Every structure is written in C-alpha cells, then in structure tokens.
Image (cartoon, rainbow, N blue to C red; front, side):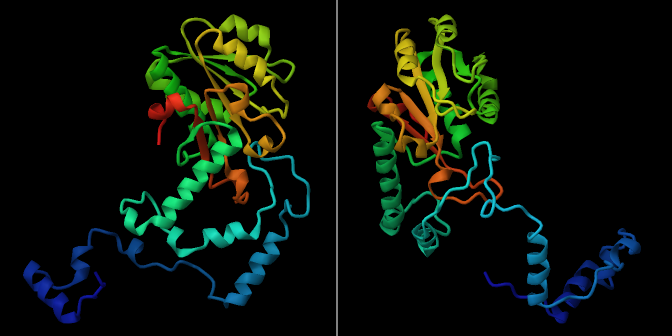
Amino acid sequence: MDYIPNTEHDKDLMLREMGISSFEVLIKDIPELLRKFSLKLPDGISEPQVIKILKDLSENNISTGTHISFLGAGAYEHYIPSVVDHLASRSEFYTCYTPYQPEVSQGTLQVIYEFQTLMCELTGMDVANASMYDGSTALAEAALLAIRLKERNKIVCSRAIHPEYRQVLKTYLMCFHAEIVEIDTPEGITPIEELKKLIDDKTAAVLIQNPNFFGCIEDMETISNVVHKHDTLFIACMNPISLGILKPPGEYNADIAVGEAHVLGNYLNYGGPYLGFFTVKNELLRKMPG
C-alpha cells in the first residue's frame, strides 16, 4: 500500500474527534527539553567529500590485500573469481528464501541442486542438504542427529576442534542432557590411545576436525576404524578447500561430514556471511536436518 500523508483537513477532523486542540496536547507528557533540542551536528557535506573522508580513514587499516594475515580462526583471505559476484548479483537471488512456488523458482532450485551435487562430489559423501547457518551449527546438528539415532547421550569431541564450534556444540546440547567429553591434544593432534579409552557403549558420536584448529593433519582413517568398532557415528569437520589435497571423508568412512563453506565464494567482510555444509551417508538421509 502506498503511503499517503494526512492532509491538514484530516488532522483537524481527528483532533476534533478526540476533543483536543492540537497534536502537541497528545505528547505533552514528554518534556519539551526532549522534544525540541539541537542535535549539534555539523553542516552537511557533499558525497565526494564524504568518500574522501572515508577513504582517508580506511587507509589506516591493515588490509589482507597488502599483507599476509594469519588471523581469522576460520575466516581466511581467498581469491574469489569474478563470476561468483556476477551470479550472486542476479536479481532472482536477491530475496530468495524457501522456493515455496517451484514454478517461479526454477533458477533457485537448480542452484540448490547444483550446490548439493557438488558438495557430495567434493566430500565423497552420498547426500548433502541445502546448507546450514554456518560450520559450527552444522557440527552441533550432526551431534544431535547422532544422539537421536543412537539413543545415547555421550559425545566425544577433540579439543583440536575450533573453540567457537565447541562452544556452539555445548549451547545446542545444553537442553538434551548430553555429556560432552573433550580429549586433550598436548601435541596438536587427537591422541588415538586416549580416544580408545573414552569411547564406550554410551557414546553416540566422535567429532574430529581435519585440518584441526592448530593446522595439524589428523589420522582420520585410523580414527574412523577405532570409532566404528563401537557402533558409534564418526563425524568429520573440515575446510572444503583442503579436500583438493586431503582424502575426502567419504573415503575414510565418515558417517557425517560438515564444515564451513564460506571459503568457497564469500569475502572476509569482518567475518561472514557464513555457510555451513552438511553431508551424510545414504542411510542417514531421512535423519538429516534441513
């Protein structure tokens, strides 16, 4: 509906109906000092002047375009091909949410299908959903899936997993009375012998990140074999770019593979927007979220 302002005649009619003389009477309880005061702002300036001021301020920043940065803890500088911006700027994606009307959402549906297909190819898993909020929530949802499926409440988690991921995991599982057991990693990787001691018949899943938070490569194949001896789910978390070199989770028999796909096409942007991926074996198709 278009906004049509009230005319002076309309205002007079409404005031007369309320039995008051002016609009000021309606707001008389608000002290005049709060209603009428100067904001003490300088005079306005032109757009070119604003741009110059902001540009001068931005030159005080240290940019990842000119410096190598080891900060980020999950958010890293990557080359983004120009085609990514071109596709993302197409008008059919500006406001897309859930394509409730498939007959007018064929482009969106195809993009979702292509994303799911490519994530399966990249991870070597059977099925992918259409994404989660971010990598941390994808990991937490994977743990919840394991708890529901196995009807157990113990989760074994390596301390080499991103600390913020572990915090989100604790938040998600707080109301499920789950027991989260963390494995110390004094040498930067998950100790296999310590892991063997912690897995028992109450364990729903084991969570390992590879490469882990410290940048070390975990022995995922050995860990997978240890985990599956106890009929426990093995949940692998990863940076998808690493799968161009490392063995994909489908090849070392992970049950669920999750991670943060921000690196595949988004800029740093002070962190975000993020994009969690969630892939599983075929037998978990009907159990996965999303």
